[in-house]
Length: 215
Image (cartoon, rainbow, N blue to C red; front, side, top):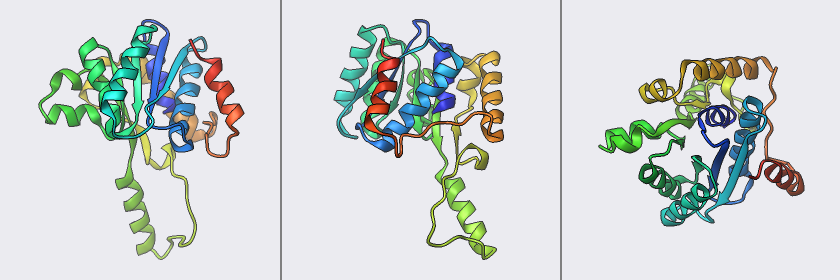
């Protein structure tokens, strides 16, 4: 999400990007926090509008909230709401605005489904590479090194998360911005950039961060 925020902040023409989450809960706000931090890192004066659908299935509400954000000057939205987020993508298609997907490479999913118009508007997607984490666990188990009974947080260094870099990304996102993403990935892996997390963060602190970037 940090990388997606950086990309969004460079693609916006209004200096106002949006985030639509399924619910106001830590797992969703973790996406939001990284998004805001990355956007501010790349473009300090960026503004970020935030809305919550209230569930993960109401696509109509997601679309409604997206249009509401567009009405206040937002021109690029990152939807993080499972199927409810598809409503925000539909709004982007109707407006002809760029968007950012989540979890899987949504541009390629819509392209394979025959909706190339929408696919071409999804500049990138924030990926959760469950396949990578599962293979890593299997490989460790085969070696007898899987730490049963404990939990791990996997990130960019393990290629377990990242942003989609497909043909549409290469077309929509300039070389300059793509180079920025590569540089940010390198700095995160090296520990030069510490991405914040919403897990364990006090509600007041998160509210202050949201309010600081509110348009």
